Amino acid sequence: MNSIRSFCVSHGVHRYVPSLQSLSVGSCAAARARFISNSAKNNRDYLQVHTNRIPNRILKLQHPTSNFCSSSAEMRSCWSCGSPAQLFFCSACKIIQPPNHGATYFQILNCDQTFAVDVPELQRRYLELQRSLHPDNFSLKSPTEQEYSEKQSALVNKAYRTLQKPVPRAVYMLQLHGVRLQEGTDATADPNFLLEVMETNEKLAESRSPEEVDDIGQAVRETLKDLTEQMNTALNKGDLQSARELLARMKYFANLEEKVKEKLTENL
Image (cartoon, rainbow, N blue to C red; front, top):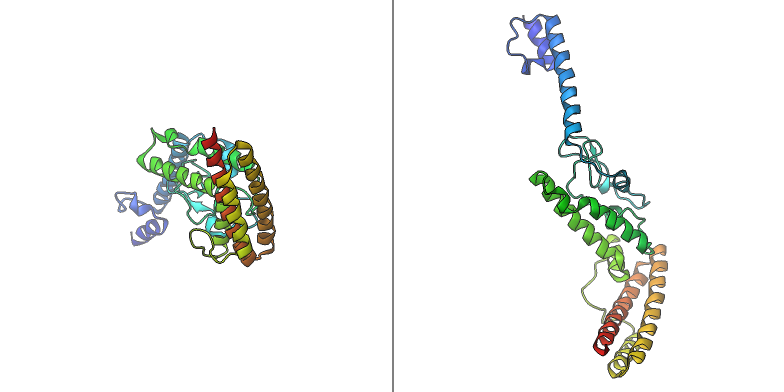
């Protein structure tokens, strides 16, 4: 009898069989086999019933292609079924996953970690993700899935807003490299550069026609484009000091660009 009990304990069957006294070794083994078979069937049935119809294109987006991917975005286990889970959905049961806050914004939007991002492609991936992650799609799901949908959708929004424009993208990339930046512009910028910014501000304030404002805006955009190209070169070289200085200049001209838009609105 002790040997039978030991056999059952070693196979884990003792937890599911009410009485061990009447079991032979053969019947214990058979009970274990039946239990494993039923468990496997139940798991398959559960996955089939609870599978969300997530488009394959979204599942493909979950595999970051960047060469800069960090270990923090590696495969996780699904909170529901325990199978390998990707950034947004489980590979097996397709249930939405909690946000992986260790993943970079580049990984979230499945693009290379480079300053020269393809903005139209970035927008396409953003819209595709939001179509699957939007909370409206989870109104009839469990409270947990609804919560994860809201958090995932908010995180994708934040990632897109950050990477969409050059200045916040540059700030974020410098932060990824460990460079901490203060809010606002850089008071230590080159005096000649600051004089150029001040003169442009004065011209804008004194402008009296949309044509004048347009000319100033064109010059500002050209300067901003040139600074953006220089930023891309600096980051590709890993020249963080130059990148930091360029970022300060980009902030000034981004502010000027906004002032030009406001001035044009006033003149309409």
